[in-house]
Length: 313
Image (cartoon, rainbow, N blue to C red; front, side, top):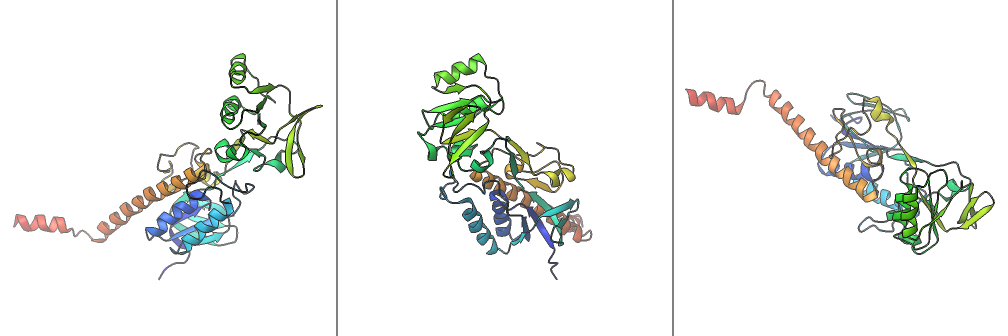
């Protein structure tokens, strides 16, 4: 009799990485549960890009297509949140259900810690974005801005220049070296010094950037954010950030991680690929365990040993 709360694999997080992993595991005939609170990082974005065959699709639609595919393989989808995960593995859900699993894949993603600027949160995911590969083409040749937030911001501005000849680098809270000014100038990127005080919006769209009494018209703003991984469950199990191999296997036995929780810069298609890779490695690990149990169940009898004994007689 099957225990309805017992699974081969518990997938925590139902974004591209988690659903992709669950699809592979379902097709491998594993009993899989996906627990997802349905609060993806890219929820504010109207469309996603760079995903072969799904370019321009709303992120929510991609996830719904994925969930429907999983249902066809018997994967259990739970709209809930794991509040506690203990070695073994036992997962306590916010809704009260308790699940057990032989292996765990954590795909809980990250959130962006945004600078405290008026208008930024309202613009986030539409006019204020981080990834030019995801959003650059849609604002090509428009007046763009790059906000200086960390040491990588100048490189970010040089990258954004690929999509428009009209790029302004707002130094904001960063220092711009003479060498960086030379590089920006060589690429035709104007540097505006001073602290940005607000993003101006009109009619539901970004119109520009305010620096005290100054105003610089812009239609989109790119910035590097501090990404905060949702790795609380991993850390509770003893995981140390960065301790994950190319297959997604962490330093914690029986635990894998995929997507932005392990690689903050992974785009949707990369996160999906990481989920698939983790699922393959994870299933191989389960097969090895299943084989060890099958050998132990022989109770000392081994066909190979029997043949050897017969040959000795």
